Length: 394
Ligand code: LRH
Ligand code: MN
Ligand code: MN
Image (tube, rainbow, N blue to C red; front, side, top):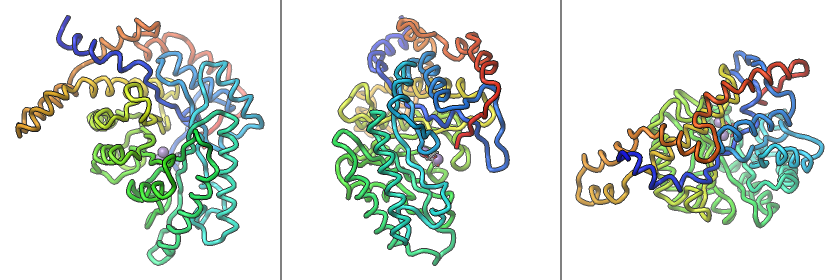
């Protein structure tokens, strides 16, 4: 046994039960504001999106749940959709509300100055909670596209106060076993100010609500250069990190495959999750939900999602490999380079062969990407899904 194999054997049990939620919208066609390209085999119904998520799970064992976005994934019978998902081997997960595609929300939704429009947005969240009750979902995820474009356009303070009031009304409606997670984003679609721009604002708002209100950290929602692992650490320390929307970015909110742009950053984030006790399989009580929030504009979507969950698994394994005792000893001794070497040793460990063997032991394909390509599934869905209207991500 090599040293790497011996170290991997130690952490292998902690990889058991790792779960990464897939976004239904990752399976729809997407693009930029310039062009949305069609991809052969793209789903034409919510059911086909769920079937695709189930395929990712079948090849990886890593994606047992799929998140829905309402109204993009609105169906008449969510109980039946839940059964459909279960029959395909997955569960329905987080319900995402959407108050960003209605003309009434041009100047805000939960923050709007008009109480009628605020109530309409609150009612939409009530509807999402009804969906959660039918699907058995735990989390209501709220991301707000609210803000202003020009200094003076809006009363920043008034909007923050109305937001607090609206959120409290929504929070009151969620069940004992349910959670509200509030996602922040520094800009876009508003360009001057955003009402929930940063983790501090999200933290302040959810802290005022109660224990079952937490922050959602989307890795693409920060200014370039932001130390995201520091935010991860702080929110865990405060007991307020509810979930991640994982993706990667080069410039803005690019929604590219997680771990593609900066695998080292993903490693550093996952190290802080583990260090802070938020890694699920090891600490079910304080589990932080891992979700993907991505789009596949030019690549096939199912293998895009397979690649993504494998990247998270691989970086989780490497982060688990950090020799925490040696790291603490070096840190305490003021051994700057020694501590850094312990950290980098884990990051630079190639765990791919060990993970392949680990998968095989569990009846999963050793190489899910290759297995998917060889399975003929992509060609099958491309042939079967001719006719009808392909869904776009939104
Ligand atoms: C906003 C966001 C949010 C939405 C999703 C489609 O940029 O990250 O999570 O629900 O994209
Ligand atoms: Mn997101
Ligand atoms: Mn985003």
